[in-house]
Length: 455
Ligand code: ADP
Ligand code: MG
Image 1 (cartoon, rainbow, N blue to C red):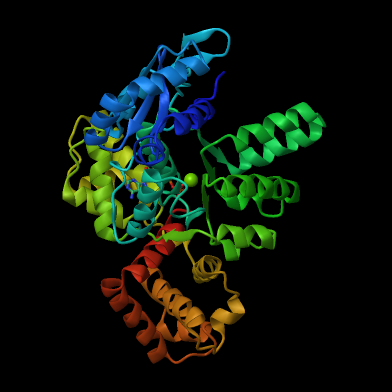
Image 2 (cartoon, rainbow, N blue to C red):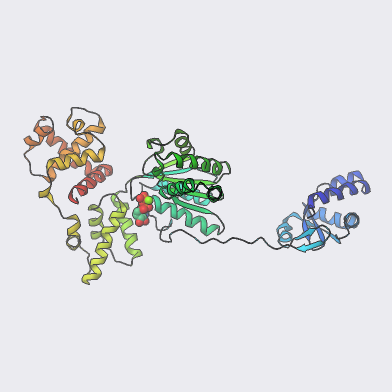
C-alpha cells in the first residue's frame, strides 16, 4: 500500500524545485496530506484564503508533479482543514501496482452488554455514606483510565460495591459498544489461574494472558479473595502492570482497605493505593428509607412511610438483608391480598424474622456478639482500659444488656469487673443518647440487636 505521507514528501521535493522558494514556503510547505479519495490526493490548508491562492496559482503544478510520480493519481484536491472529516469518511486505499481500491470499513465488534440492567447509576441512591464512592465511580465511568487508576472501593457486605461495578459497566457500555469491559470476581480469577497452571499448556496460558491484556477496563469484585493466594497474586501482578502502563482502567472492590489485606504481597498492596481508595459506610436512616422506596417502586409496590421506616429500623446495615424484608412484605401483601401499610401489619408480617426472642438471650450471648463485632477479647471488654476502641464497645454491651435483659444493675456491674452501678447507669444513658444523635452508634446498636435477635 502506498504511504500517503511519504508520497507527499516526494511531491514536495519536486515542487520545491519548480516553485519559487518564498512561495513554496508560504503555500506548499504547510499543506497537510489528508487521504486519497478515488484517484485524487486530498491536501488540507488552514484557511479559505490560502485555498483560493493555491487553487488558482499552484494546483496545476501540484497535479502534474503527483501524476508524474504516480500515473494512477489523476487529481489533487485542496480543502480547508474543517472539511477533513468529510473526506476521511470516503477515503480510498491506494494499492501499489493496482491503483485505488475502495477501502472497506473495519468490521466493528459489537459486544453484548454483560452487566445487570437493574444495577445502574439511576437505581443507586445517593446518601452521605456513599456519596464519595459514587462520585468516583461516575468519574471513572465517564473517563476510564485517565483519572483514578486503580479505583479501589471497600465496604462491609451488602453496601453496594457490586451494584456500582455494574453501574460503571452499563454506563461505559452505553457510551461505547465496542469497549471491552471485563468483570470477574476474585474467586473466579483464582479458579481460572489454577486451571491454567494445572493444564500446563502454553496455549491456555497465552489465551488467559490475552483475555486480560486485551481489555479496556478490568473490574475485580471482592479482591480480598486473593489474600494468601500466591500464584494468583503473581499472575495478577503482571496483568495489573500491563494494564496500568497502557492506561487501562482497573477497578477493585474489597471488604477491607488495601492496608488491611494481611496476606497480600506488598508490591500489590502498594499498587492498589496508587489511584484512589474510597469506602462506603453503612447508610443512615434517611438513605435506607430512600433505598427501600426506590426498590418498592421498581416492583410497583406502594410502600408507606411507616412500613419503610419499620423495615429500616429492624434490619442490619446490610442493604441486601433490608431488601429481603421488603420482599417479604411485598410477598405477604400479594398473598393475603391486603395492603401492609402500618407498623403493626409490617410487624405481624415479619414476626418470624424479627420477633424479639429476648427470653432466649443471656448476658454471655451479648458479650460474645459485641466482642466478635468489634474484634475484641472479653478480657479487654471487662478490663479497666480507657481507650475509645474498648470503652465504646463496653458501653454498648452494657446498654444492650440493660435493654434486652432484666438484670439488676448491681449484677451487671459485677459482671463488668466489679464496676459501680452508677457506672452502669452512665453507660446505658450515654448510649441511649448517642443513638438519638450519632448515626454511627445507632447503626452499630441496630446491627448488634438484630444479630442477637435473629440467631
Ligand atoms: P456488596 O457488593 O457491597 O456486598 P451489593 O452491591 O451486592 O453489595 O448490594 C446489595 C444490594 O443492595 C443490591 O441489591 C444493591 O442494589 C442494593 N444497594 C446497595 N446500595 C444501594 C444504594 N445506595 N441504592 C440502591 N440500592 C443499593
Ligand atoms: Mg458484592
